[in-house]
Length: 184
Image 1 (tube, rainbow, N blue to C red):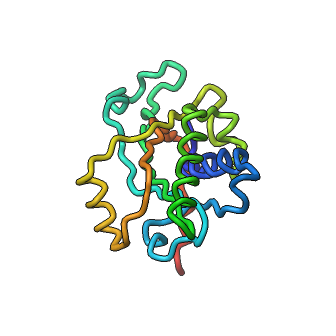
Image 2 (cartoon, rainbow, N blue to C red):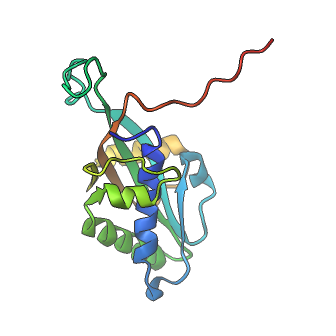
Image 3 (cartoon, rainbow, N blue to C red):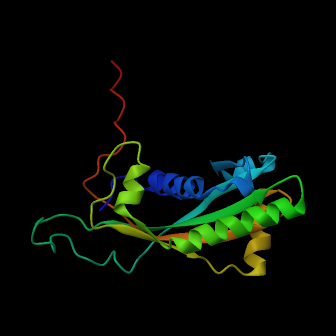
């Protein structure tokens, strides 16, 4: 199970994967993790990876506390799916299309992010245990969902591809942010 750094580590690993796959044909292109608010002022030429939704998975949550004989009384991990929107921005429609095709081809070539790949992108290591991995899939998105998302962003709709990083297991033993010291 991964520490609470897992979510940012998955985002960093996806961007690192794209960085390593960059070719001379693409030239200089900005690769960034972005907030939905950042899409109002996108890069002039680049790819934005937007984590627009997180969803806990109920299927693995049914494990009762203490069911792991190696950790009696331990809480089960929290399985989370990370829903990304990958957008491409460029000075021309052709540039945007080229960038999106490159991103899709690159991510399709690596549908499983191994612990080794993930941990290379971690700020604090290791975030993922050796046997862990995260599945990266194109996510089906209806036209209505796509339109609703862009409308909620209050931004002009751009070519984009939705992806989901499935089953990131957050360790219940992972420490959270330190609480501030009480005031005296």
